[in-house]
Amino acid sequence: MKRRDFLLFRTGAASSVAELSCERLFMHYQQASTVRGGGDRLLESDAWDEESTSVQCGSVDRLFGKLTRELADADEVRVCGAAWLADARFAHYVRGVLDTFRRQGGRVTFGDSTDSGD
Image 1 (cartoon, rainbow, N blue to C red):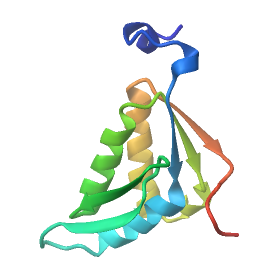
Image 2 (image 1 turned 180 degrees about the vertical axis):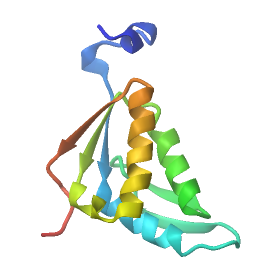
Image 3 (image 1 turned 135 degrees about the vertical axis):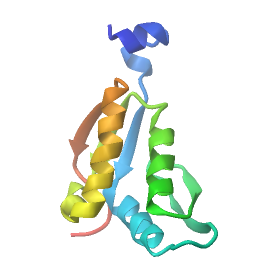
């Protein structure tokens, strides 16, 4: 049993897995990259973890900060569509979020993409 599971009274069966779509996240990143200075901009689309939601972000930092907070409740992140990480700046932000998640005791796996494409 992992220390984190013991402290939160979780068992392996009750672990939470979040699926991170690099394709969807990249689209949000592209839009957030164009926001400069002004007020917040509302971005509508599917969230990275199956629920449909709105993501408010005024900048790339806010977008990835929101992602970091949303992943805090998960035990594992399954990264899909890793080919989207070819963009070095985007990959830098994603790696930062995943590194933070790992430091907090989470597990990251890379799976086949369920995103549209190819």
